[in-house]
Length: 464
Image (cartoon, rainbow, N blue to C red; front, top):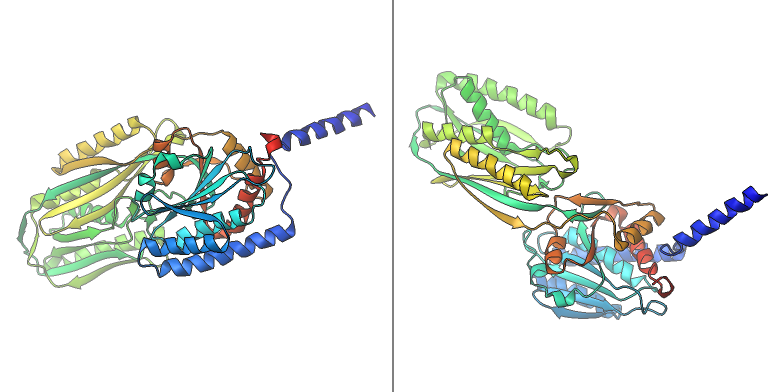
């Protein structure tokens, strides 16, 4: 009997401890309302934002939604809006929360998903402390809206950034990034061979190189490796027209070049490239169903890279670091991505982006790239392109939100990310913010909105 009483007492104490941060689960009617609003707002916003010609068009849909739902909305700083909700009864002394969403013309579908989750949550929350929802503009990865925000608006104790991510995550820190640009003036000489082939890789998925959830082929590096292979086979050839990718920080979707040989060596080149195509398709076709790797006869160009330039180009791609850079600490692996190459007729430019958590890692990458540029006789320039957001594992916000996610069967744990996001900018403005970033998407949109409602409820006055 005493043993049973002891067990009951322990259970009661545990329940009392959990009740200080947890709250009652949502009922079926609340869940249905949240689901309806998440998908309703998403359908409304993604259509309107897709057709938007200016950031102001996106902002107007947010203002209209706020008016319809009687939520205060004001314009602040550069292309930014802020929605405000006062604390409800029993939450007048609760900590405040700010939710941040990115808006842009570049990613209307992804941005509208995050906005729908945040707005469905605040619409269906009837128990909460002060809430602010911040919408800041970006353009092609430049978070200029967040950068222009005065820290006087960052008044809430807790800060939650909503950011699209293929798999639902909770990030509590991010790397900084550095862009490296290799360039070399190219001397052109007359072509000698009578057979030319356009070698092209296309149809790859691409995406942000910060996303390491899938393996991505690099078509730029693949063509660089092909040049080296042709050189080692003692094939006499020339090359020109090397280009690929759109940005240093993105996985390249395509790359191409033209290779010129004599008629006598044409078959040898075709056989060599055909073997490389087979290897490439065997390695990646299952994951990259739309990829195409072709070697097609084309018109012989009048000029090509000089022998010396071609030798140095081959050297660059042979020695340049691309991919993971391991360290003694497995949790602090740095990554690099060669995502851009262009031959503009006068010079060849190659760009790579590195992402790392520490200055020591960047120092090692820079030293490696300096050696590569010197050996290959390329000029090298580099600059920091994004600041770091220092990783933390525990905080009141992390614990409260983690508990809320468990109640909706998501169970998110703190992680750090290579992805550039607004949190690093807000951290520089106000380091004291208790901040997390939710990597969100529509697959778990209902659960994420529910987790926010439960998180808001955890701040009842009697718990503060």
